[in-house]
Amino acid sequence: MARVVVDVMLKPEILDPQGQAVQRALPRLGFKGITDVRQGKRFELEVEEPVDDAALARINELAETFLANTVIEDFTVKVESQEAGK
Amino acid sequence: MARVVVDVMLKPEILDPQGQAVQRALPRLGFKGITDVRQGKRFELEVEEPVDDAALARINELAETFLANTVIEDFTVKVESQEAGK
Image (cartoon, rainbow over all chains, first blue to last red; front, side, top):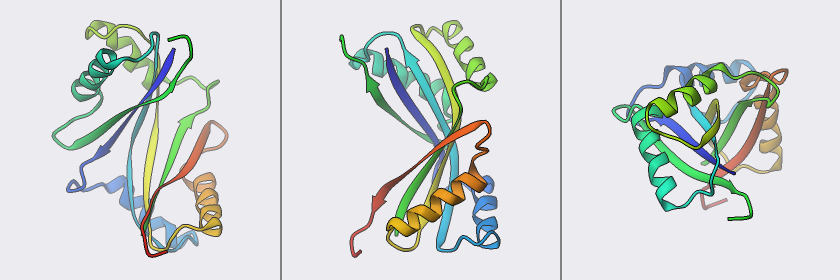
């Protein structure tokens, strides 16, 4: 068992109204000094087998075709925990 | 300038229908061996000043009161990049 995390964020040039709404609310709530907020998605995948290069390539494909809209979003894939017994 | 990332995920005991929908779709799409998917939110905050312990404490408070619903969600705060010139 391993855990793989896929982070999906809007590309920097794409307007992020959710993040802007959060950012604008902060001074009213007493939080200053935060110049920008971007909101995205985080997927935690539990994978049965140890994640080797082939599995990682497949998860990248999955993220690209299914979890992210690559026209407007960027994604990163990282293995967060690789359990022993590989 | 520093970037702080706040990850907000549903607590493990809370049902995650979004994650389940993704997980169920995977075999149909040809992706096997993924036993669980959880979907959450990722916030990227750009902070004006270098993030010291006091700033981090304030961002923790912000995440707890505003970004996460701590009844059903867990959150983690981490400093992703601390620019030089501190």
